[in-house]
Image (cartoon, rainbow, N blue to C red; front, side, top):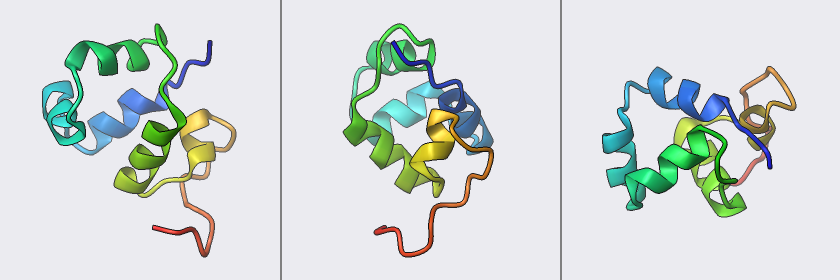
Length: 76
């Protein structure tokens, strides 16, 4: 199972609590908490949504790059 430690970092950098974020995402807090803790793998659709919300690349969320900038021409 993949673990995405940047989920928490991005949320905190955006000054969002888990409660505030799950309200925006309209999902149960326990579900999102499991994603942050690596207990469940987030669906790709959520990764895309978070990348758009935080204005970072999917590769950055996945830890494949240290460059958070989304590629030019990315559909937003």
